[in-house]
Length: 448
Image (cartoon, rainbow, N blue to C red; front, side):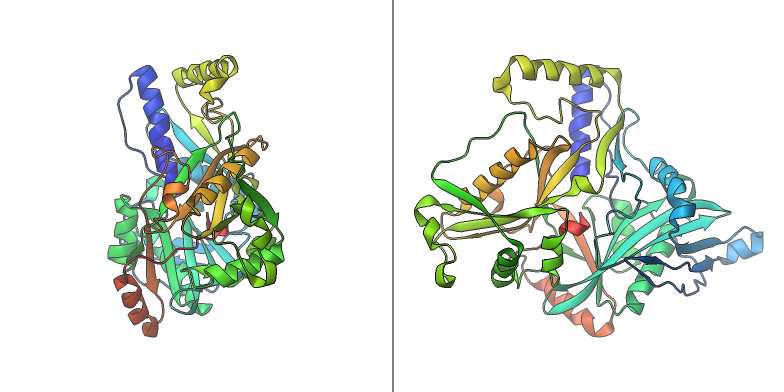
């Protein structure tokens, strides 16, 4: 994902200053951390979990080898904050990947399930072995538009301790999460990972029979220290939640993965609002008697930094010196307009996520660009926000060229995989994967 590209950029900076050897790193937030072998005789886990309740369930996965050797079985159960919070932090640190001189760390600010807490229904499972927490996984459920309305389960945050990989823990966690999906009448399960994450692809595609589904692009734009220039010919204005919901249902209601509860997304405290752009000469036409200008665009903004922050956990002294030098350059030579992230490499930082990006009209690309610049300038006023990010379907060619981004930090081909959990839905999956990827893709900010 895009964290991969951010690490590459950080590594490149360190290499230029300290001549260290290049080393390829992996994303911390990837779904799937290792190859896994199948565990025999998995018993069904009895867990029902929602927004405000956590009921403990347990299952012991014990292979024939374990039974013969007398080793302790793996226990899979629901997350218990009072027992697992500190141990999960240890597991996260163990699962940090990357070269020895730079680590990108996700700070959940004391809430390990922050990334799923805003979903309609969610769960977190942990795996224990000999009273040690050795794995974790998260999942959420919602109703979206695919071919028709469908109930989907999203898999994220799969972690397995480096000391216990290739023992079937990752496979077991995914299987138990799928069982929870099935008990909640989920039609499809899906996940996202980097295209070159071989361990994750092997686990989900080769072992669990997920199908490669979509390859969206994640575009990253660092927040600069000076505001970006805006065209005087374009007017940008904020609309209320009711009008935003109407526009999204009317113009994006048939988009793949469009959430049926878009009103809940727009009304969430992390959603900062929805903005529309049009040419000043056509402003009076917007919404009058259900009519709209010939060219207009819209997007919404989600404050992901309100959930978790990112920071560099370890880096050489040369990077620290580089950061201090950039601060001086930015003060003395304002014309450089340095990205604020580069001036504060070691401070925790958040990001804004743009979702529901839509445009109408033959020359509306400039309006999308203007909206992105507007959000960038808004992000400058948020001390924690260092990036503006969006994710678009691979073939949304009308939109992508007009979104400012740094190619070095962006991921131009992420990978989504999907699996039908009901036999009658298998043909729908086959049909969706055969259709050329020309339809827009709605990325739910609650799953970033």
